[in-house]
Image (cartoon, rainbow, N blue to C red; front, side):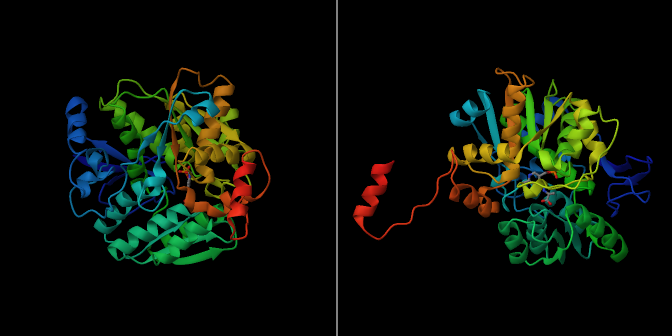
Length: 418
Ligand code: F0G
């Protein structure tokens, strides 16, 4: 097995071991896999590792290492992945889709899907001799990077938009020991700054513009296909911000088909928050024009106006006959309340996928009999403030806390009201 890095913009080809994470022309690099097992042999290899050890091969990322383009060597792994699929009647009723599975990426070690891309990108960074790592983040990437950098002893530098990151995520970055910069600007400004700073200062950039992040995030799709016995669903639905996941899902499906892991490619649905929906606007116009917007949404994880992986996101949607949707903040919060009340729980951005399923079902894009896997990208405790705000105010699905005196009669009064 060998891999190369190919620039999507100018076609430059680099060796897989090259430390660079973006092309000199400014274009995004992509890992091009070459050789290795295919079809039934590849399935069998990945399936054998399923019930294996708790080390690297037990990781829901490294189990698919033949598809990650990284050779042998020490791996920085927690391990990660192995997240569950949930079917819940209440969520199926809410969306109108009976066969709706929720893949809960909030079950990763730092509470979001980011750990999948991070284990691969950090491992590559270590192999390439990195001296420090950096990222811009709406919160989850920084929490993940901080944890993996701590694990391998690399200094970590985090750029987050001041006042726009959920407390749980910020607390993680601080607790894991990353030097954390609160930038007076939005995520898009943070990303521009960290891209400039990492080039100028020789720091390895770990945002999803780093091609190795995309490789790791492909395993969300590979793992869900494996969980379904390699029988693809009709749809895979994912929240979309910077479009790293959308790009990774497209690449995973392309490669899974090429390598004979699956016979048919599911359709992708990328779901944005209506207040942060430049990709949706482009989709509506047949992708003839790229948009940049000033983003605002309660789902701070996807409060992004100028997605870095725009081109590869377009490719993913086109190649899977996919769609892009936009859902209101109210729809996101309602969907979150449904997922939470089913005992599963997720952060607001994650619920965009469930809100998207409901909307696409109502529009007839997703049919009642379709099989759908919607990805929940982050854990409910990432953004506890959002849940508290929702439940403390009056609303049809609100479950406000009730203050009482320490008396049984007060408890009884509360019980009678129910
Ligand atoms: N859901 C959650 C919980 C996220 O944290 C993110 C992105 C997304 C969805 C969107 O994924 O960017 O690949 O389209 N969070 C990044 C961060 C931007 O910095 O943590 P995407």
